Length: 110
Length: 120
Image (tube, rainbow over all chains, first blue to last red; front, side, top):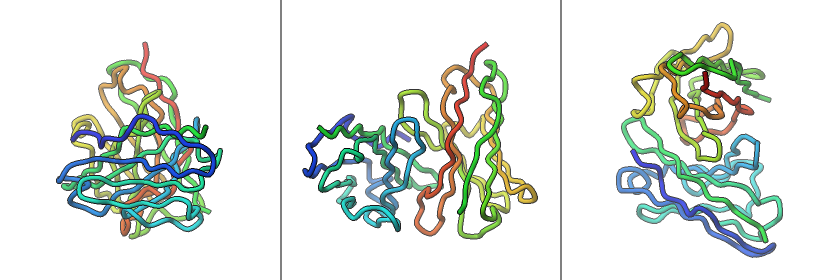
């Protein structure tokens, strides 16, 4: 099972919007709506930001949104803030009780 | 407030078995709503799912690690454990334990992580 494909890095200025893609296959992202997104600040544990491709957990800012089309899921962050600078990982169910993470994307707020 | 805490040796010799425990506090591990999992992150790299366990003992493992991984649960102690055998330097990583919500298939609560180095 190969890792999901994410861009290594993205950047944006405060107040702008950015989108991070997560590309899988018809065996994982394309077959299930079970995509989650995690934010990880340096030296910290990951934090759940989106589940079921587009649902925000309680307490997560509505500046974060998720979507999915075909084999690609996306995380959009609007109104970028300095504290959004972190690594972001997607994760998808891949069938047969197996899960796969993306390689991670480093978000830089300029 | 539920919390998870990893514990175990920070240094393991090559070819030996890595053993870690995750203690759950502030809630019961014996809930039908959750699985309990292990995820690792090599230095400077991404996350890798290792495996998950249900409170009754049912397990699912990453196929790439399945031959070397054993996850077990002790409901009386409210903890679950990871054993990874025949380790090499490539197994050096931060190991996280986490709670997985079965209904939405996501890891919602994570431990702080523990660094394990494989070296002689």
